[in-house]
Length: 548
Image (cartoon, one colour):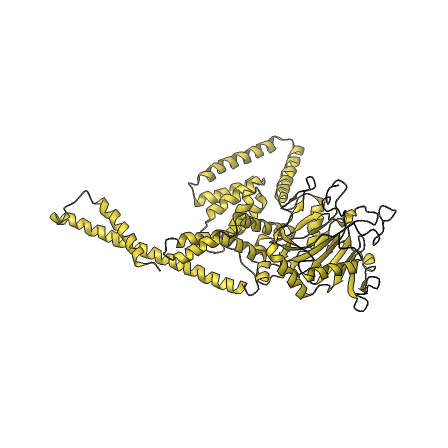
């Protein structure tokens, strides 16, 4: 609550400001007529004081409402933190709250004398998400929207497949997404999210935003996509609400001029050219609208289709040649009495999955070891060989060595026993946790001929094979897909998949190009072991044929 001293101080300032305005007319007691003016001044002071008290009460009420809302939200969230943040809208709103809304609250409360809270908040804010985090979470939502073909309303209502903790987006949330898309010159998503914000506002949702600002963004984004007629109509709606809006007045004249110019050009063109021009204009609008939805790359389309479970090229005949079995890797002593369950995932390249190959207890221990070391995942620059972050790899990773914990040593030995490959020359166990809409776009695990120095520093040759543990189930999305062959492998906790990146001849198998699909709902944990050529000379002898 506001202290008496604080109230007295503010009241003194108000009184002083008013009395200073009257300082030119002193000796008030000599004139009742003049003194009556002081009564009106005092009345104004009381009104100002009441306004001040009301403002303080409103401020405290707003703080209380905020605290109550966050208390309910955090109480539900901490019951299942990973599940709660597995919903991308919850993750985005967490970024937005901590980066933006808590800052607004700090400004609101700053005049209060609760120094403990302010100092604590100020200290804690040093560790809060940044603008970059908020923008990143927003772009993740846009990426998920495109990859899984979700409309803005589906995301805004939180109605995502497999979601446990649904969360509604407010008008301001939708507006924020639209603004981030706008700053990225992504007018397609700007239109989608400004239109969604407008729809919710028109539906009766309370918001400090008004139709004017939304129509301003919406009309311009539509114009940038080539639909001048619709942009003009929305600009007229804006001016009906705010006739003095300077930018809208300028846009109105410009849009009318451009529309008239197009009509004149169409009228002057020969009949055949008119039809052609009309078709070109229509196609231009369509292409412009699609430009930000899906990059016009065949691999990208195949990748996104596979992420949605579409375009999988497994025929019934090929499916009939895939089997499951109990596997002991040629009577390995560790597995003769207790063989592991193995199933074929794909035939060419040969991809197998090991079932129940890592226990829940082991998974939790691996995660416990990795969490303090998680850093933004990097890629090796194909030209310089330098490790660097990339927008197409959204995850954090940590490396665990066998001598740090006996469990890691046992896991490495397990991989060696089941693959028959030497682990001494393999890379350390890499643990990765994917972020909001986390993904790793199509890539090769092995170094190509145009990357002769890819693993030169390791001195262990190329990556001959990949072993990938799935350490969590994923409610929606997060598949490992192979665009060139039309294969999708879905996460299943406690399993691992294995494939060779190189033929026995040492040549790269280009059909192993793969990607990690964006996580739509859930929290994806994986760990992988990249196995190298050196030490495998007698374990996997070289073939004479290049593709054998």
